[in-house]
Image 1 (cartoon, rainbow, N blue to C red):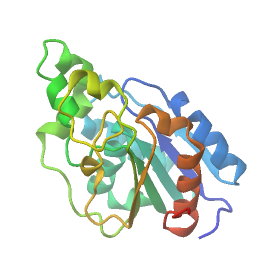
Image 2 (cartoon, one colour):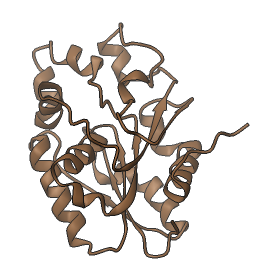
Image 3 (cartoon, one colour):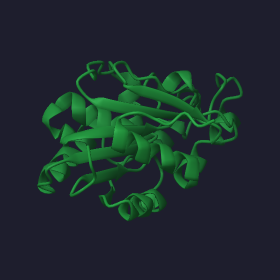
Length: 214
């Protein structure tokens, strides 16, 4: 699969804007992709609504091939979209960075404090409360997890399972049917600016597999 006119849609996580994906978007654009950062409302809208909006956006691009890159909650929006609208896979590949597919121990702990439910927003609360979609074998999904356990999650959850990226544990990132999974020495927010993560994203979009560096 070559870049050519391939489009990459980057989807941000909780509490941030599409600008959080700008470094990765710029790096992929330099490699020849038509890279765009998609913004949504993770607190105001629920996960289903955000997934539907992402699907409509992907269709509106009218691109021959569409790849998706999602960080944290953004990856859950992508997975929800694929489960509801399999055709929005766009014939491309999907890279998930620090995405808590199997649930989030840290988010569950945060939800126990009075303001926690509001901070998590409707999208994350829906994912935690609903049955997780599991039919992803038809898609080419690569998962990046972090093992540098310094992050906000450790402040709200001292029992966060390790190894983790400080917010999401490595085990929480495993998606059934994924094509590849790699653990890098980065923390949750650091994924967005890590050259190593960018290299692995590019490798998976290009080859459908991550690079095991010596």
